[in-house]
Each structure stands twice: as C-alpha cells, then as structure tokens.
Image (cartoon, rainbow, N blue to C red; front, side, top):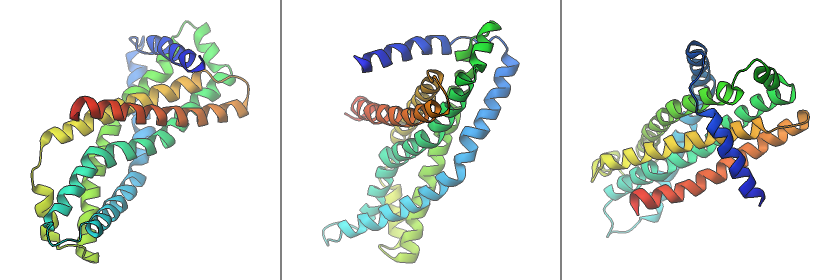
Length: 246
C-alpha cells in the first residue's frame, strides 16, 4: 500500500509540475543554470568513468574470447554493442541518479523544510512547476548528450587498451566497431537515456518536495531519491528493452 501511495502522490505532483510556467524568462534562466549545475559539472567524471569502463570491457571481452574459432574483430563488435545498448545509457544514468538525484532532492528538500516553498505558494506561484520543471527539462537535454560522449569515450578507451595493452590489434578492434552497425541501436540508447533523465529529475524532485522536518529528513529524502530513482531506472530498463528489442 505504501508503494501505491508513493506512486499516486508522485503522479499528482507531476500533474502540477507539467504546467506552463507563468514567467518564461525566469524558466529560461533556471533552465540554463540547471543545465550547467546538473549536467556540465558531471562531464569530467562521466569522461573518466567511460574511458576506463571501455578499456576494462575490451580487456575482459578479449580474455573470454580466446579461441581460434572466434575472429578477433568480434571483440570490437561485442564492445560496441555492449557500450551502446547497455553500459553507457544504463550505467551512466545510474551514476547520474546518485549525483544529480541527491543534489535535486537536497536542494528542494532544504527549501521545503525552511518553508521557502510555502512562501512561493502564498505568493500564488505553482512551486512544483517553478522548482522541478526546469530540472526535468535540463536533465532531458543534458543526459543524452552525456551518454553520447560516454559512448564515444568508451570506444576510445577500448582502442587505448588495444594499443597499449595488446589484447588485440587496434586495426581489428576498429574493424569490429564498424561491423554490422545499426543507427537504430543509437536511437534506442538515446530514447532510454531520455526516459531515464525524466525519471531521475522527477522522482528526486518529488522526494525533496515531500521532505518534512529538519536537516535529518533532508538527508533521508536525498537517500530515498537515489534509491527510488535507481530502482525505477532498472525497472524501465527492462521494460524499454522488451519494447524496442524484444
């Protein structure tokens, strides 16, 4: 019953969130600020994770495929498919759920417990849309860009592994990357990331918006945001995979 209550309250809040902002100039200003704080600040750590993830995946794949019956170029193919279809959109989104989700929940939760949200409501402002909608739109714009960068850097990391650790010749790795390429796979990854971005921002915003009490409750709301958004990502990952690839 608690889960159903959570879903019901979440949907009711989202009904308020997805309404037209009264002041578009303020919305655009908040959107730019959130793009910078929620997305661009994550670029460096996403790049580092992606490079090492691509290198490790390439090495592990080459170790598992040591057979004269398996062409070495298939390692590049397997790495590309793994990175595009699952690793970058899902693993990076889970990382962003922790980083971005906790930031959103703590920011809005702090405003809630210090009664700043009540002040907005007293002024006749739709506080849900005013605070959460710019974050949702910002994540929906930035997260797919971060995943595209992650895919590219993962594949670059795999090339570096081939060049300097010699699991396979780099030329055969490149041949595998180019083999049987489908643009549909990239579309699928971006659609997943777009859905994940909306889930991260909306669930985290909801957890922060419902925070009550003091600093301890803000911390709990931040933790709850990470847990709930991560669980939702995993659920929708299975659902979207079944819809688009099943």
